[in-house]
Length: 315
Ligand code: SF4
Ligand code: SF4
Image 1 (cartoon, helix red, strand yellow):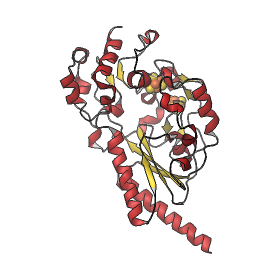
Image 2 (image 1 turned 90 degrees about the vertical axis):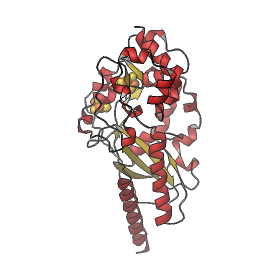
Image 3 (image 1 turned 120 degrees about the vertical axis):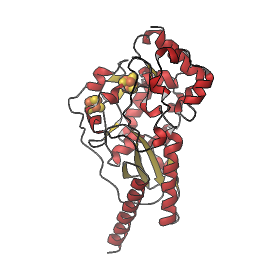
Image 4 (image 1 turned 180 degrees about the horizontal axis):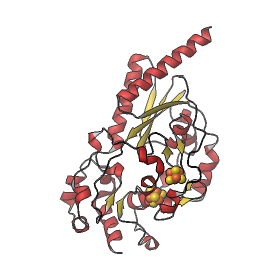
């Protein structure tokens, strides 16, 4: 009888957390038990061994932490997985270079993290002494594995989390807390089926047939992560992308249901999609600062973006 009461409390808290997440603008919220990611361990090991992370050396660090949230938060009991929509109907100049949709407006690291922290504050105010940490692409966490476990979606062949209702144009965040909650059922069905659109459309053939993305071959890696020169053998393959790439999401049939985000901070400077190729090629550091003031594009710095433009331009 006591157990049943505890179960009811967990259900009530979980419901309360999900309602608050929705009120904060998250399009999905699921909860999974904080446990060792047994299934994912061999995949991560093989991915690293194959050097699919390229120069992203940080991926090699904290191997154990990536697989066990209890090493990130003491006494962790629950992983709350959250999705935040960033889809926009972009009116792109068809004869220009392209910036990934997620990077058009303000940096999600700040916009979304602020909301995850707000959710943690709410839990602490409403439930009591709960310890936890908020993560938005900022810690060694296998976010897609947690989204699957928490019932948000399945991991598609393009290695992104996909939802039948919401597609894949969303950021994932996690809140790891030391509170037992009612757990959602994982998504076990892979709704990619026989579709291979993302594999066929990937400009650099980075998506392998076995549901693995060779990160070191991906345009996002080359234009954002890589610090050195872009390898010459990639010339002619970037399809005008100068920061990130949306191809494997644009072609995905599940994204036909995507609705525009309500987050106005993700709407970028109009010049980003109106610039001609010439405008991009002649961009000055002042203009770069103006249009990417709070954008994640700042991460690549002016010189990095120039490198990308020069690489794509000289084809
Ligand atoms: S982001 Fe672009 S380059 Fe990277 S896997 Fe997807 S389609 Fe390929
Ligand atoms: S394009 Fe097809 S194979 Fe690729 S993620 Fe979408 S549904 Fe899956």
